[in-house]
Image 1 (spheres, rainbow, N blue to C red):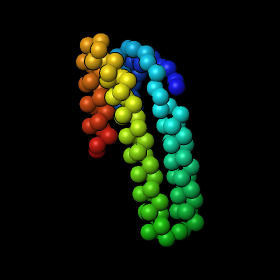
Image 2 (cartoon, rainbow, N blue to C red):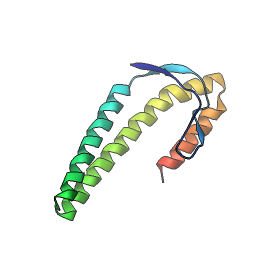
Image 3 (spheres, rainbow, N blue to C red):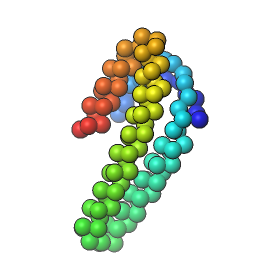
Image 4 (spheres, helix red, strand yellow):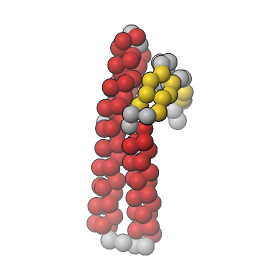
Length: 110
């Protein structure tokens, strides 16, 4: 389990993210890290497939597998976020955390 504290930061568009300030423990940090590393490795192997001129259908199938892995990782993060960040935000009256969750879900669903 990894404990962390949220603070203000900016995304690549300069928008402020995580304006709430609380600390708690995330149980899925290692799982998320391992999933992302696995997806990154898989994506790197797809780059090799493209460079080698592999069949487009094979590349698309592998890309679908990476997308599925990323979606599952998002699901794990979202569940962990709901169980920890959102529960904490509700208990402390932090409505901004809920606004941030809504924004994150909107972006995730695009």
